[in-house]
Length: 327
Picture 1 (cartoon, rainbow, N blue to C red):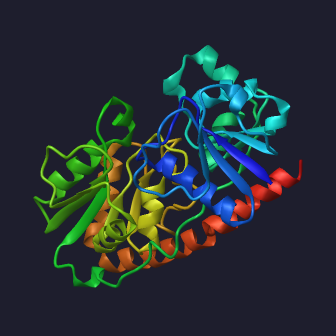
Picture 2 (picture 1 turned 60 degrees about the vertical axis):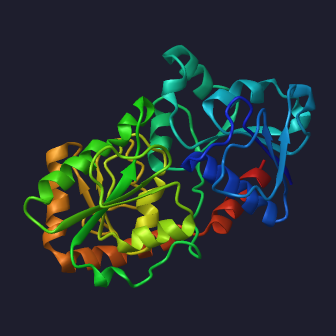
């Protein structure tokens, strides 16, 4: 099949969404498809190599023909709708509910646009149903050969908590401050360290270990050192870092917000702990795991098994191809 990912006026940067698109496109290419990422500017993602076609165009008439065209963000739906039918059947692959890019009227127009909807998580599927818009869940899959246990956590002398560092207004719903507040409270009672990584900026608060823009090898080592991964975010599609941490048998504390992005894999007291959607409940769950090493181990093992059950990138992209071929 000839498949294109439309990133016009959206672009690729160092973030989880761009990484998912590049790795999905690369995987579809490896599976024997002809894949093109269509862009309107230079690739700004330095994390991942693009292994398929990357075409920069200035006019929609130059958009390549194909079987399937995929709008990759809310900003790309308008240009996708303007493409000729020779460019392919039109899909919208929703990986985040980008209500911050437009007003409510525009948002409804985007959601109700005549594109076939693919989402990457249960929470996004549920969100679209509030607009009476059906969708199919296709998760991106995971890199089992890049994120895996290293058997180094047993050497920790302190309990290490970890989390994602974010900054800026757009990232406010990541709730980085919850992680910091947990650390500041817990270190007054226990031997605690805080490890973090992020894509942008450097924390202006105390962090025992921080990596900016880590590669897979660096991330894997960090996850493997962390005993408890904190996931307070309330604005995700399918949240990547907690699942990656679980692949290393780090136990995750998530939260019950509607868009936590973790409900596909994080089941309370089975694969991790899920707090109510408030800080005090979140902190209480983290403290439970700080005090109970055996529980951390048990949930860490079951958490890894859950992520393994969700399949590799190749497994999930094969499911996407099945959806396309059923047209």
